[in-house]
Length: 245
Image 1 (tube, helix red, strand yellow):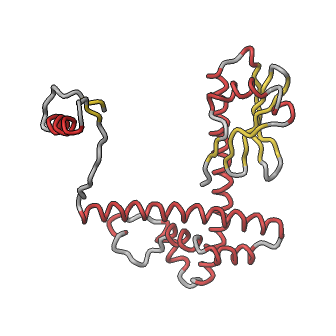
Image 2 (tube, rainbow, N blue to C red):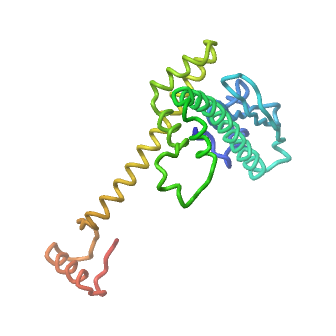
Image 3 (tube, rainbow, N blue to C red):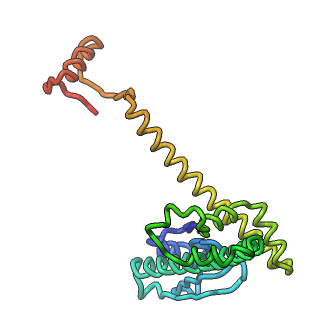
């Protein structure tokens, strides 16, 4: 799943429009946020009217838009509109991702069926049934999710599968770019999760480590020796010593 990149925070959109409406926004729209193939644009409709529009930048198509008159709106209303637009972008992007990913997974299922033609019905029946008591002990059950996830993350194999099943060069290129970005993102998340798990495991094994900390304080004194004694007295709990932290 792709992430949202914000260039202008929700609460600052109206302020930014008012500040730049006679300069940058008079020349071109400004991107507020991106998510996957979708971008949220801030546009100057007129001197007092700002526009928010979601566009699919790959397909060069506008998805939806809304406008606000600056004299009749507030920071809160515009911020809410931006938040809803970003949420909409995330939902659209996730739908696109899931649709493309599922299409590739269907090809993997077809590949598996061809390679296991004599056992397809048996495995499918087990996959579609639910027997909780026997599930953990049944090593013959095809774990479809793990199978697809593992095969899909093999980038070379996935690219080869796209080449095999897609004939149109434009579609082929689109799916390859998608697969590369999607797999890189998924594997980076797997690596991060494994790193966190490994750190937690080592922490349990090694226990808590002792660290050395240094603190800088100032004490009021007539000379260095007096200051040293005052600091030692303070560390010993003498509340009469004034310390500037």
